[in-house]
Length: 536
Image (cartoon, rainbow, N blue to C red; front, side):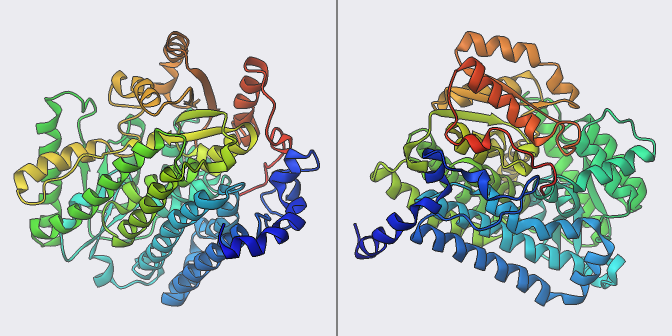
């Protein structure tokens, strides 16, 4: 024990009765006790002991600085953005979102969680300022706007980094892809817009929300031409058509092979990417530079190398990176950043050092209170519900890995353009949701291999009630779970529409299994059932 630890130990002992985890263990409260009813608004900050409370507060301050820098770098466009776009107001809930994400975190897992989250915050705030500054709807210059390549969020931006003069930007990131994780109430508005326009009410709520954003003219006006896609499913293909007509720019559909595990798919998808590059060259009057691309490919190669080492630790009880701190970071750093920002490489180097040390010390996250190791096969709804954090704090279920973490992890050649193109195609085919819920039965069925490889005894399965693909495998997955001996829970949700399946309805899927099937008692009874319907 260090000198500092010795000095603060008596303070921690005196104040431990204010720690909600201590309260839960002694039956005098818990993590939910500090919230106002129905909200995600806490009456006071979580007391975690002197050291961890300071770590948490320091991270809060760093994120606040990033927010201030965003406003300071483009004050007028940011203010116009709040006035013009409904989704901008939802970003004000970021601080509450982060506080809930890491409830109950202590020690090394808290340090890593905040390092990962700050990487997202500093990146996202820069991106908001950048896109609003160049948004023609808000008075941005045509010259600046036309140096941006808007593309669908499920197209990996890495292959566009060969255009030195241009900046790729995922069009749906700000109004839909990221903000739906922060605010459960923003996307239902856009869903209603789409349905009022005539879109059927039984389609995927993500696709409906993106369509509503387009109809509501809530996409920033940037770029000269755009890249749409058929990824990850046929519903998103229809969404691309709605967006194309509403936005009214030249468009190239990057239609990669659906059955991408088949060897015949690679040449087709490879040619599609080459055609997309040729389209950008023609529309923007620039030439692709492979040496420029290789610089960024090296960054993503390093990130993937570190990611694979992280997986070795995930297979043990001694990983200091866990739960939503792992999966949300991987989702954003791979899908949205995709090798474009060296800061993420810096964070990964820092995190892997902490993980190595934690493993050497046989450090167990959450004070060793984990009862089950689970593989989570779930998209957006698990983020705005803080689901991985809740499962650990309430029932001791540690989410070891989520499906979003299994996106493309192959290395990309950084010397030969032809080899690089093959690697890049395989990499792109494994994009967000692309390799999980579509692309053939083998992709969904792979959940058992992932769970087994990471020593999980439990699988929490995506049960999107509006996804025709997932509905078709329901009984098959149940049957296999019984045969393979996994604890298996289908978690119902309606992706971006929390009105259909509420947060509590989602939690009840786990509550009933843990209580009725396993006969276990919760670690924190205040988390079993509570109303947070008005929360962000």
